[in-house]
Image (tube, rainbow, N blue to C red; front, side, top):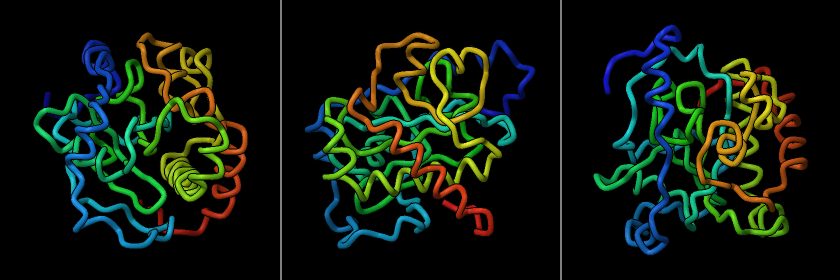
Length: 226
């Protein structure tokens, strides 16, 4: 699909919102890794995301003004690069705007491109893939991968600022009502249908959203790029 889909195009919005990211096997993601371009040390979390990879799958364009949800995922893989490289692969069946991990971030779609991210939340959503697994317990997210946790919170806060979204979590009930905010693929599945439950029950929602609001408060005088 190409061209700009406007908010009044209900049939087209319904069509693009049927699509959902399909995670490949871990071995596939590992096979796409290129150690030559992997960041040797962790980039500052405020670094602009690399545009080395461009996602193959999107459903045309939308006005950026319609974006009202930041949707968080887990890649079901180990690295941001593996996920970004997969989205750029001809065999991929999904896409997101950002892929990030402890060390780096990749942008694979522009803000105005409609991703294949989560059923019911593609047209109105900005999608962030966090390298990791829905099965992870809270301690792994918040301690072992603290750098990714903070990078993700920063990027979420930055895009809340960019799109005029209040930095508060929205559950499935709120999504069905169209309430703007930050959510997860699991909440989208509960609201609109689908089988995905990432980023999982161990993903530390409350400390994450606290960190998002801390970053949000500090981002009122910065260039909103990322």
